[in-house]
Amino acid sequence: MRITIAAATAVSGLLLAGIAGPGQAQEQPFKVRIGVLTDLSGPFADFAGKGSVIATQMAVEDCLKAECKGMQIDVIAADHQNKADVALGIARKWVDTENVDAIGDVVNAAVQLAVQSLAREKKTFAVLFPGGTARLTNEDCSPETSVQWMWDTYSQVAGAMKPLAKPGTRWFFLASDYAFGHSLQKDGAEIINAQGATMVGAVRHPFQTSDFSSFLLQARASNANYLAFANAGADATASIRQASEFGLQASGKKPVALFLTLQDVKALGLAAAAGTQLTESFYWNFDDGTRRWSERFAEAAGGGKMPSISHAGAYSATRHYLKAVAASKSKQPKTVTARMREIPVQDDIVRNATLRADGRLVHDTLLLQVKTPQQSKSEWDVYNVLEVIPGDQAFRPLSQSACPAIRKAG
Image 1 (cartoon, helix red, strand yellow):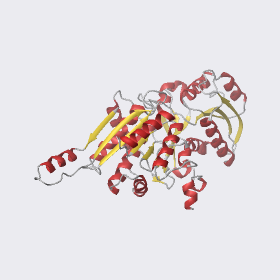
Image 2 (cartoon, helix red, strand yellow):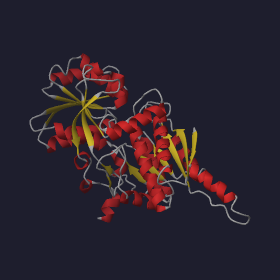
Image 3 (cartoon, helix red, strand yellow):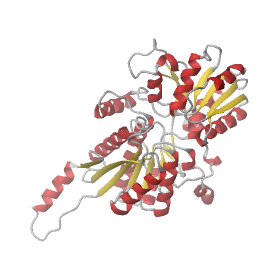
Image 4 (tube, helix red, strand yellow):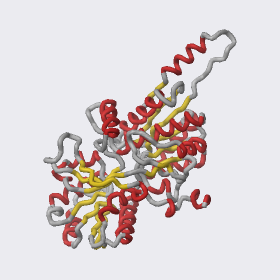
């Protein structure tokens, strides 16, 4: 997939230069090329995929009307198939032979870490992560060549659990048995202990489990009043649906999903997901700005689909990157990421945002609760906003960072 976008002013400028007179050099537009490396056909296709390409294109179009007037900006896209080796092959080709200056989206933790390592090695392109594993801005950070925008695994846990894990509350964890689930459970347990709550039990299930009955029976037998789902994707939707069928919420177990997306809730349906609490850094129906941008996205994407947090992050990170490129008149990653930290982050996506020295964008997140079918007023009206969580509470404090660049600077 290849999308090419050029400013009308750039085209006009070239035409004018062409008739300026013999012997006069034509003024070439400042060129930037962005590659969207995403999952176009696999399990993350709805969450990222084509929507992230569209959101990136929207960011380019908006910048060409403002700070990027006169520039030429190309957007290309490819499917990494959720394979790190495939992603690395595409990224190397883009950077070595196709003059790609920034790679965006990069959904899937293994792919993210591989592409970030390549960027650190080459130092010739930047990586714009809408979200992903907390390692990207913690122990594997690369703040001169990459930024992480909307969410990470730590913020998904902290944004939901810090407001809920009060002293006296009792928690049971249903976690996926691989690194992602282990990380969610570990961060959750640390918050529980720090806040005086109690973890009364935990059970781990294999990846892509279809029958959660034995695990849910253990949860029901516990004296927990919160059931935390430390899983994602099909595992999250299947376990939450079956928990509803088992009547766990009716028995006093409040469901808390540590990674559930708008698209997951739509797939579940409000009848099965109602009452589930979760955190997201973006919800299309939060305020006038999010609604305005989301309506534009839905029109561009077709079908009336509202954007995911990944789509919103692809737009916001790309938009801010392009502002920094235009302001610095450079495409060198170290120069651009430094300018990204200097320029205020302001758009319809994020609130109270600051880009830290470790590459982590810190901003408000939302504690949400899935509505009942009776509460919903439209197809995509699925959440009640319970609380706005300030960024300094939702994201890992810089003082606790394992980022080598921060330790070296300190």
